[in-house]
Amino acid sequence: MKVKMILPALTEAESPFWRPIKYSLFPPLGLATLAAYLSPDDEIDLQDQHVEKLRLDDQPDLVIIQVYITNAYRAYKIADHYRQKGCYVILGGLHATSLPDEAAPHADTIFLGPGEETFPAFLLDFKNKRPQKIYKSSVRTLEKIPPIRRDLIKRNLYLVPNSIVVTRGCPHHCTFCYKDAFFEGGKGFYTQRVDDALAEIDRLPGKHLYFLDDHLLGDVRFSGALFEGMQGMSRVFQGAATIDSILRGNLIEKAADAGLRSLFVGFETFSPANLKQSNKRQNLEKDYVKAVNRLHSLGIMINGSFVFGLDDNDKDVFKRTVDWGVNNGLTTSTYHVLTPYPGTALYKSMEMQRRIKTTNWDLYDTRNVVYETMGLTAAELQAGYWWAYKEFYSWNNIFKASQMHDSTKHKLKHFIYSGGWKKFESVWNFLIKNWKSEQYAARS
Ligand code: SF4
Image (cartoon, rainbow, N blue to C red; front, top):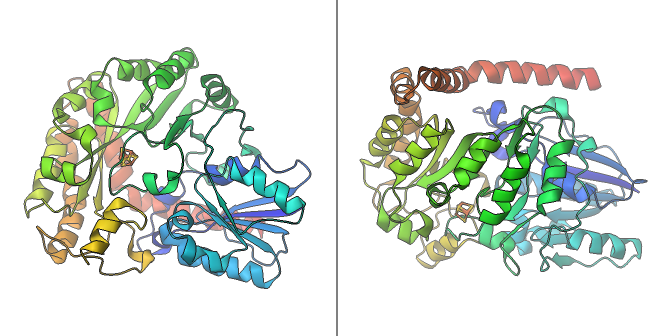
C-alpha cells in the first residue's frame, strides 16, 4: 500500500515574518510514531511542508494529514485535493479533535485524540474494507508501542532532529491549553515505560536531545527513574516543566545530573487572579524567583513563557514582565497573546460571554488579538506584545540579563546564546532559506 503522511505548514510559517529557524527545528514525530503501525511492505512518504515542497501529483492509497489550528485551512485544501483524486484521506491532530464537525467534510475518516490505539484499529478495518468515519481514542497506554519510524524523517532538513517524546499530555488543567480538549475521554497524562524511553534515547545518534513533552517532570517516579537511567549516557538535553516541579523534592537536580541544560518554564503571569482564572493552580503562591535561582545554581538556561491579555492585566504588564525576566537572568522569553483555542475551557467561557471576535483560525497564532479584551484595549495588547519582544531582546537587556549569573562562564554562555540566537535571527533565517532552496533544487 502507498501511504502519504503530511504535516502542512502553519500559516505563520509562510508569512513575511517567517522564521525558518523556528519552523525547521523539529521533525513531525507524531506522524513518524503512527507510521510504526504500518507494514514494512508499505511504501511511506512522510512530508513536512515546513521544510520541503509538497508533492501533490502522486496517487497514494491512504493519505494521513495532521491538523493544527493555523494549518487547518491548508490541511483541508490538501485533503480535498487527494479525495478528488480518489485517495482515502484521514485527518487527525489537535484541531481535528477540537472541531470534528469542521474537519469531517474534508476527510473519509477523522481521528479524535491520540492515535496509538485507534490507528492500528483503523488499519485493520481498512484492510477489511470497513473503515469507520470516526475513531475516538479512549484507551491510553504507551506500553508496547513500536519504535518510531525515524528512518522516514529527513534528518538533514532539521536543526534539532533528535527530538523525543516520552510522555503524553500533562497532569494539569490550564483553561487556555489544548491538552484537555485533545485527551478528553481518557487519561490526560501517561508515560512510556522507563526502559522503552531509555532504549529510544539510545537509538538516537549524537549527544543532544530535545524532549518535546509538555511536562517532562510531571511524573516524579517516571522522571526520576528516567534521569537515573540516563546517568552515564553522556547526553545533554532540553525540556519543559512547571514551577512547582522545579521547587519540589530533588527531581530537578537529578535532571541536571542526567544532562538537562535548558528548560522551558510556564510562568505565564504574576497575577494570582489571572492564575486562578486560568486554572493554573500549580503556579499559585509559588516563589518564581526561588525556582529561577535553583535553575541558575544548576547551570540550567531558562526559556520563560508569558501570556499577555489575561483579564487582570493592565498597561504596565509588559514592562513588569520584561523587567522581571531581565532582572532574573532568563536566557530567552517567549511571549504570547492569550488565544482561546476552540475546544478549550477558555474558548467556551469566552463564547458564552460573546467575547470571541473572529473564528478565522489563521489568526489564532498567539500573536493576534482574537477576543474582546478587558483590562487592556486590543491595540494596547497588540502593541505591548511586540514591544516586549523588542525590549527583552535589546542588546542592553541581553547584556544586563547575562550579568545576573554568578560565574563568568554562565554570564558568557547566556550572552552568546541569547545574542547569537535572537539578534542574528535574520541572518540564520537567510541562511536556512537559502540552504533549503538548494536542498529543493538538488532533489528536483
Ligand atoms: S501546565 Fe502547560 S501543558 Fe500542562 S495544562 Fe498547563 S499549559 Fe497545558
